[in-house]
Amino acid sequence: MKKIFSWLLILVIVCTVIWLVFWKFKMPLLQQLTLILLMAFAMCLHRIFIGPTPADRAISVDIIGILVVGFCGLMGIFTGINWYIDIAIAWALQSFIGTLALAKYLEGRNFDE
Image (cartoon, rainbow, N blue to C red):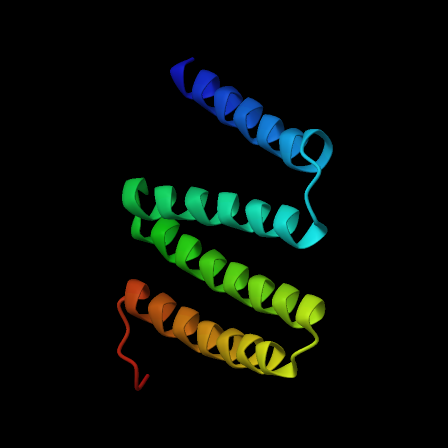
């Protein structure tokens, strides 16, 4: 019962923050989307520190990589600078390789197998 209550509380907090960001406060779209990405980043950091299993932590690290790619994509779209898109592509490739290496390590295999 305590777990269900905590999940409902987190859901209410997330919905409230999204409502405040998109409908209550009048901010530019880039700031709204950045706040949503930062909120997701904070939730991933919470899962990294609290995560009960190493797999939970690995998934959170992978999601943080996706959030960085999303932030670089947003910056590239809103500023018009192609350099951000290049960083996003490089980060996505590096994140994919890192996730594969971490999955192999958690499985107990060597990197040369």
